[in-house]
Length: 297
Length: 288
Image (cartoon, rainbow over all chains, first blue to last red; front, side, top):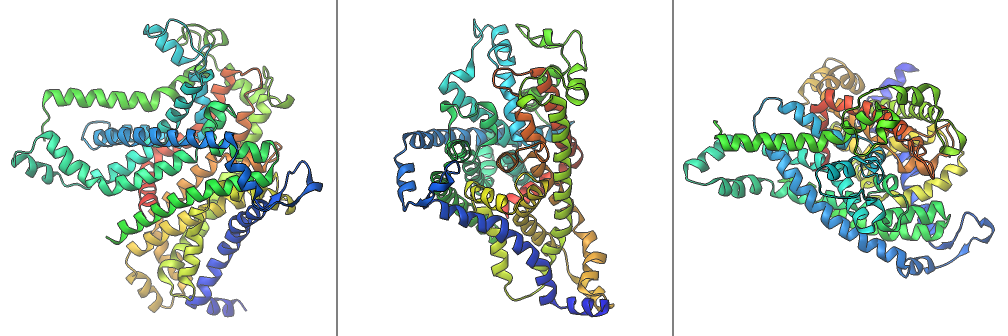
């Protein structure tokens, strides 16, 4: 019997199916099927606090979401968030990767240290910064006060526009290491002779930076932009810990959670999840296309 | 290559700026965690504590007093149950990944079979699947399957969402190593499975370590899914129980800081020891 099984398994088709079928069952059960379920919910009037009143609702959920001012403001907010966050992440990551590409003692220690913000759980990251931004005893207040920049302690997170920018900062702090590592990988593959040759040909530092460093980062830069746009759009954990459901930092992800799981409106929540998800999927397809293109070159 | 003095100074300044940017915030939390309450709540802050104490750690780990959030549950109970759940969920998920990753990579790179491309895109397709639609559907599916508020549910979920990355990454890794050694093992009478475990596994080991570490980190850091899918200490991971340290009106920042430090120890240790693997995994994961 055991012998028969191992003979049966020693066939490419049989072996491949034995390996893949469990994975595919999990995928369908816990990814594709639930996604289909919520698509169904999005056409229902469905509040889990009023289960007896579930009924077909057509496209009303979608229409309600599009006409919901809170949702519309959250979209404007997240667009601002994405633009600022993506520019900041790319610039800081470029600087960090260029420094790490130099030779100096302790380089591998610094490389480990810069990954730490990325490795900390995002929600813990939110709480860490909430303490630093604290209005009564926070380190930020203390530092600015001792430097003479502010005269009185500020309740930063109570001021809407500042709170939003601090949420952006939180994301930038966490995500920059990841992009810096991607950049560093490319920079390290540039042969040093290229810089030497350019120097011999009389190219100055600016020219070398522009024509060698930036030029070689062009492709990965495109991928980094898309990845950062997706990630900054999807932020949830950090904002949840930093400011919760505060109006000032309410992005579609936060609002989607609030509507669905705090208010129990599964119908409207699902419709919102699909509208937002469609936008995300669009970005993801661009990303997948870009990275495949890179692979085939 | 020799550097001029000015560019040497510039580099040094930049190195210290980057060090400050990355390490100062966690360092401040570490300092907060060993400060007495009087020092913690002082203006301006005491940057270096005059009377360092481990009281906050004792409270978080053992005694659990001085806490008013979380619906009457003590801080140490929240913390200990949370950390235990996190360890169980992350370790089992990682073990599953370690077992399935080489098999999936092998199947998609070495075996020709019917439906190869369809199955591959079915797996990779989850990357494009946005989070909330899945999570909303999962909530009702989990409650029907009695998986709501169980560690099993979270493990199945986190493992499922690691599948595309491990498949993609390991497939690439297998393709990068030559198949001649496996072919030789076949001629010597090995079955495919024996060839995989005796020969190829050693060659893809660095890739497997990278995949496992990234899976562990992402499971340890997971928050939104357990927030939705668990509601008691039976299954809440540390990331979720820690948010309950913040009561509605009052936060004990010393306990919070000690908890934060303990929560970030596993990821930080992993980063320090497995830096190279993480870098390899991250770069390959993003580009391919």
